[in-house]
Length: 300
Image: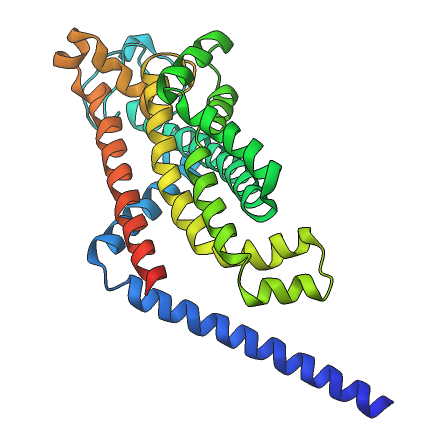
């Protein structure tokens, strides 16, 4: 008995070690392929810098993001204020760094919401089929038929400018493409031998969906989440630019670009809006590069 138990423990340890070794090998292989894409690596470096700056905002920003100082209003870039000040005398560099936190946080939460909704609805629709599939697909079609941006703007205007509202609104209206992708994956995978075998031995449906089907769609979810963050950042910037997203004086990339709507600020104070516009463009492009690199590396 003791010898058999010892052998079982030894076999389990060997299996765990083999699994860890296999995982490390696959990660190294993935990185070796991903790192061959120059633009993907550049995009990743830009994102790492922006995210690090956002996380370290209290250490980097020389001033508070919402500290007005009207005696120093409208100052151009200089030693005291690296990117100048806005019409209320708030430091543009500090607002840009803290604004990165807000924009990235809104995008991350929105993508979490949309990924959870899209994956859950798509997997349930594809795996169960029948009337469940019919009902969920009609629901998906209803949401997909709306002019998303216009509906988000209208709903945000009704609910009022709020960071939390922006997160929820963007997340709730961004899940339909993923739902259709996950439905297709579930329809394909449920006919595979390992799924049929799991059903034959009596595995619960919830376990089959979570441990067999969902696990085999992780690559798709990761790539979709990366592109989803890009879309969510653009949606937040659009809402904040129009004044119905992140409320003033809370900084975000979109709300800072809003200065460009005033012709005087557009021409005479480019430092008030141009840095946030440049960062926004750089981050959107970088996410696209990283997403393309991930898609190619996962397809190899």
